[in-house]
Image 1 (cartoon, rainbow, N blue to C red):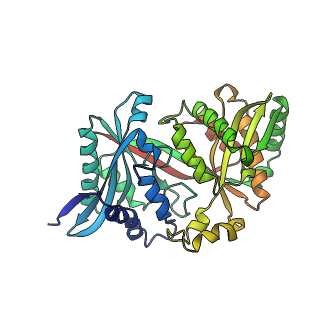
Image 2: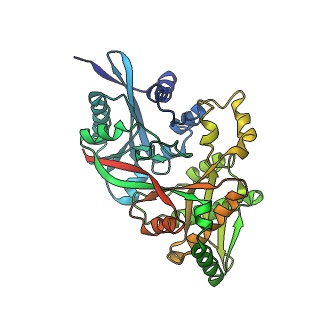
Image 3: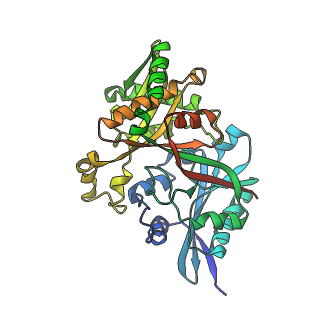
Length: 373
């Protein structure tokens, strides 16, 4: 009988083993995009990642007959439980060989940790929060993930379901193509009419006034997304960290603010899909790979619409459609004709209809699972 043991990650060497285990799992999955090792270390660093100012996490490695076969993280997000008034713990960074006993052992480890923290539900995967890479890919394996979206083997769904985890919520990703949208006269006509009716003005990000632009982002983001399932407002420290990272790769022409009567009422945060470049870096930015960020930047064929929304009092007026239309035109100017709007909650009717109105195609699905502990 096989012997499966679990080891808690405690040293820098353990952490590197935890990070690099993915290379073993995905060696035969050509659509997987290796994460930057430097970025993963920062994400998991409890002293540097501001997420851990309101959260706890322990990470574990699984061995079978002495061979590394899996990993998992157990997470307690105090801010989530405070906002939603519940007792949910999370699992994340789940990777396993195709072995139900290994998966069960990993999930048992996380579940026991969560139970010991006085929580009553285990939910995931989140890596490590809903504001990071979230959910399990369940449809759309034939295409690489866009930037900051997860990818996993198809058999993970079976491993989780066999354990007893059930669907909590599905997340959608829509493919939006410039040609399909532009060929629809109704979309163009209605967008123009809505923009004129509300005297809505659009402007791109002003990098010279980045601090004030960031304050606008913080205010709108936390207000616009507050009603969404699982939403946890980003703290100032978390937004500052995200902004510092994005500032290295954003194209200011693709970050658009919407204004009505001189008030900023919405925005779209769109990022070129740098996974196109990261894919060939194999996790290493230095010594020379970082140059590809500049030399191959104009070759990127996709963009990801990470955030698009307006303040609650301006919703359901068609203003989001104006933003969609504008950013696709802007992307086309740098020869990007495909965009992914992700992720969108399956029951976020307004965003789903907005993507469909742009002739978007639902081409990937992700799932968050949960189980009582």
